[in-house]
Amino acid sequence: MSVVTLKIDGVDLAIEEGTTILEASKEAGIRIPTLCHLNGITDVGACRLCLVEIAGGNKMLPSCVTQVAEGMDITTNSDQLQEYRRMIVEMLFSEGNHVCAVCVANENCELQDLAIEVGMDHSRFPYRFPEREIDISHPQFGIDHNRCVLCTRCVRVCDEIEGAHVWDVAFRGAAAKVITGLNQPWGTVDACTSCGKCVEACPTGSIFRKGSTVAEMTRDRNKLEFIVNARENKQWTR
Picture 1 (cartoon, rainbow, N blue to C red):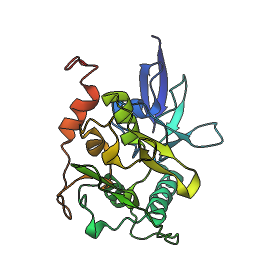
Picture 2: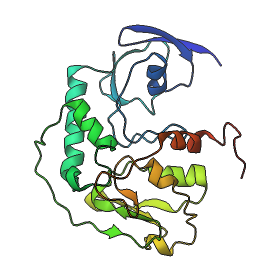
Picture 3: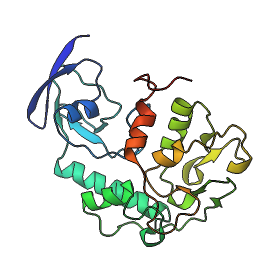
């Protein structure tokens, strides 16, 4: 494939055509915050934390689903982008019930890490305190919808890596949530293989292992990297 030349934060870069801005930034050693992105599965641009500015453009674009083009001049960390990212994290906290002090993923949560990174110590938005259920019908795992940020990583890893497609997104607006089966209790869905990939992929404490208490649940990111790359690397066959 052909190569395109561009600039990211003033750094000249030559990279393969078809590469996303997020991938190109990683190649240049430039970090762009993400939440819904997970190496090895399809990007959907759900969280909008990876927004970047492109010179000559009139809007910010999600770097995970925007491909590089010849002559691009990209800014990844302007004052405006920092403000937008902080606002997004504040909205994520205010629209759910994210109480870190009683969460199984406390100190091992990507949303919590992002809040620290963007400098969020409070939310300017009123908290909604929605009434959301917890499903612990599965013998090994549970899901607390209060902590879900609708990144859909569980949906995509179950569909694209495990091939079971147990998870999906249902309803609209504030009522949107991830569901198992046709909105059946997780423990009753025969398609679930109990592989735990969704647990490893979840960036918060929403999908958890039963028996985990506050701050106890840790994730093995090396295992997650294996899960999403094993098929491409021919480390397993189905």
